[in-house]
Amino acid sequence: MQLITAGVIIAIWVAWFVYWLASARSAQRSKRTESVLSRLFHLALLLVGGVFTLFPPHVGPLPDTIIPNRTLALLLGVVVLLCGLGFTVWARINLGQNWSGRIGMKENQQLIRTGPYAIVRHPIYAGLIIGALGSILAFDVVGGIITLCFVIVAYYRKSRIEEHWMIPQFGQDYLRYQREVKALIPFVF
Image 1 (cartoon, rainbow, N blue to C red):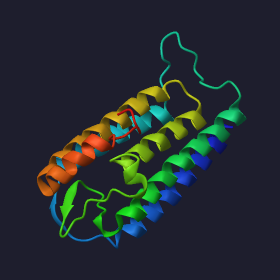
Image 2 (image 1 turned 90 degrees about the horizontal axis):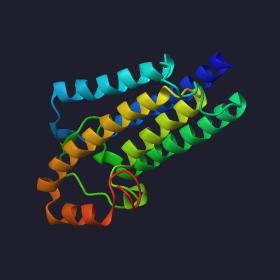
Image 3 (image 1 turned 45 degrees about the horizontal axis):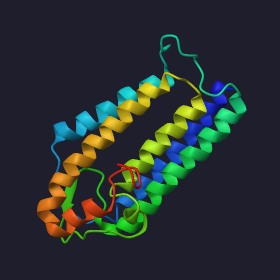
Image 4 (image 1 turned 30 degrees about the vertical axis):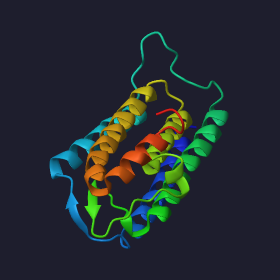
């Protein structure tokens, strides 16, 4: 069952990644991007987190699984993963040419507040966190909680850096947006 789970989850992520790369061609040129070290640190957090999903440690006195029924864990995980990645695609479509894979500022960048950006300020990051949660549920390992922590830290950090870039770019409009819309979890955080 673990092999089937891995195949399904990997296939979903690969399909999403292919879409993501293909859609990147329509993005505007960046006038400023994050440093290579910042980008590598972000990717390292995600890589370490991913290792804990594929090779989960035993977590003290906790049971090894989250959901005792493997089929239910796989189905629930796939649904959560698809919802998370679907949210990222919706956000990516809404951003249009303003999208960038790296933290950066685009030439003629616009502040987008529609679609998923009316729900959270960083819907791509929120969707990727939800996608990671779905993967963890599908693999059904308590050690995956460590993965989720790494993913949350990676995208929280990235959102903070991005916001420091957005405030000078959009001024009071962005400060108002921060007051009106939560960063990653609607109405909460």
